Amino acid sequence: MNSTSNLQQKGALFFRLVLPIFITQIGLYAMNFLDTVMSGHAGAAQLAGVAIGTSIWVPVFTGLSGILTSITPLVSQLNGANQSTKIPYVVIQGIYLAIALALSVIVLGSFVLNPLLDAMHLERAVRDVAHGYIVALSFGMIPLFIYNTLRSFIDALGRTRVTMTITLVALPVNFVINYLLIFGKWGFPKLGGVGSGYASAITYWFITLIALYIVHKKAPFSALRIFKTWFPVSLQAWKTQLKIGIPIGFSIFFETSIFAAVTLFMSVYNTETIAAHQAALNFASFLYMLPLSISFAMTIAVGYEVGAKRFRDARQYSRLGILSALILAVFCATGLYFFTDSIAALYSNNTDVLSLTKHFLLYAIFFQLSDAIAAPIQGALRGYKDVNVTLVLSLISYWVIGLPLGYVLAHYTAIGPYGYWIGLISGLAAGACLLWMRLLTIQRKQHQATPAYENSL
Image 1 (cartoon, one colour):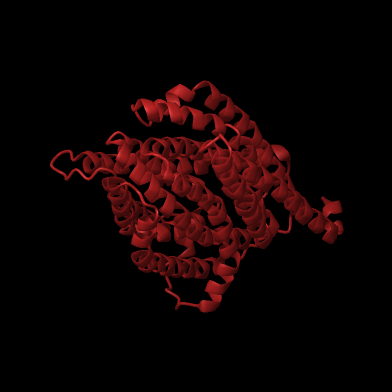
Image 2 (cartoon, rainbow, N blue to C red):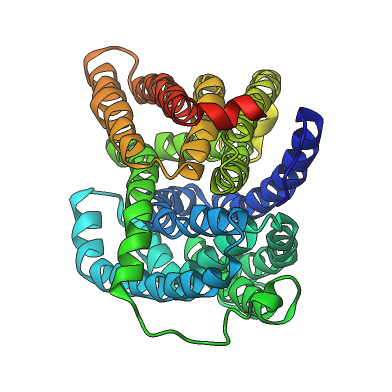
């Protein structure tokens, strides 16, 4: 990152941040996309099983990895304040915390996974795939959490092309291993959806080893000498990271878990409905990578400017990010409307699944505008280190408004399973409005607190 003096320079720098992040997110998401699509072509039960497994795993992973993203605003603000000598300590403690969180998930999961799946009353074939998929993923949890810490550090320095390159290198590896293990090619066992879990775990080890090498050997990261000193574990340092990271993690968890909860509620419907719901949700999540990438870039840019006490520049980046996301959302919604048939055909050749998927995709159109506002604002607020109120707003939007409304519509109207999607849309819209008001409040307070500085710009 570096300082800018006008809006044109900010736009150019912001674009250089966002594009690699977007490609990285697409690459990472493509791994889940490949899991879903390739499993779907192995059978409806395989797709449904991976859908259930993903619905359990994704909220846990995204919530906990959200805690680890506290590294981004911490490092970004240290970088903006020219205090780079403090960065290695923060990163090493982040790695320790990542390992501790991963081990906690593995231990806890060994106790709760079977009871959770049994309580869902799934078809036996679907349950077995879901269980096997999650167990397979567990072999890659520790490296995945470490990688998220390293990625947050790398991106915080504005070097987003590095993580983009790592992801692009890893994607074909994931595809090949998926192909071998799902379909049993070239002498490998035919594992179906479970094979996609092992493929992801192997890929997580691969990207982590590459990231460790780059941070240790390649400039500008090597100049910081991150691994020169392995500091002892510091509970105080963990407390600092958790103070920022826990609200971020729970905020992300509340958002992602509502989608998981909907999928779990839909387990009462037949396999075709579960598969169609997951297919449509998978593609809607794919489109979400655009505002999410802008959100990550906002955290880096806003955090850097806040660390340097340039609050007007931070506001300009906020507006730039939201406007960019809205423009892109309009294009995505338009494309989704006109290419519904083609998109549905990516996931299955089952006639019932295709028909249901097309209907679900029409509801996904309305996700776009709300996501385009909410995601960038969340990124900006993290750059300000304002995370506690965001946590409360996420809880209200998704679990107090979205899910209850969806449940009522699904069970007490003729809309059926589509009622859950209307509830999701309502929750996202409410969240976008509340977050917008919070961002305006934070920026107004900073403007009033630094009038001399603002007037001098």
